[in-house]
Amino acid sequence: MTQFSVTDTNRVRRVPKRAAYDKETVYAIVDAALICHVGMVGEDGRPTVIPTIHARDGDNLLLHGASTSRLMNHTGAGHDLCVTITHVDGLVLARSVFHHSMNYRSAVLYGKGSLIEDPAAKMAALAIFTEKLIPGRWDDARQPNATEMKATHIVSIPIDLAAAKVRTGGPVDDEPDYDLDVWAGVIPMETVFGELIADGRLKNGVTPPDYVRSFVAKGE
Image: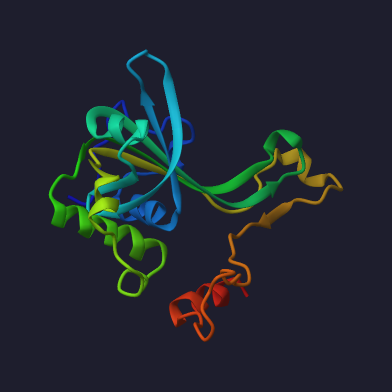
């Protein structure tokens, strides 16, 4: 199935023409993000939203954290979850204050999580996390030992429902406002990486690998 079902839960009601329910659009937004925000309701009935890193394994969203983490223990216990991701691509300046906006890509995901218990599956999930953040790093750095594995939880959340909402393009003003002498347009926004900062205890002669250097190139 390449499309998510559209229900009362995930239907986009505000400006529905910007909605998308296909997995290709939703997953592209998920994969491009470094963090997500996980919404949950605790046993005391209070809602909480916590930012955390994530990765995707097919139709499953993966969360990673300490085994003592409230987030990990709650999300791994099968409760209903709502996960959101947003990218801001530009500020949209209209001729009127009312019509100012942003260009963005956002996704909202719904599902119930469970802890990955199998050691091999857990190690494979950690590899997915590492390779998502820095492709090439998993085989280069020391991999987790038994103590570190015990201290880490991985939660897998099958993505049952999801929706994307995307805005692109310039401002849309009221017709009379097009005659105003006010600049209108888009201020694009990008996330870029800066110059590398070597660790102070780096051994002499150890240089950044090509996959690290590539991050600097992306920011130029």
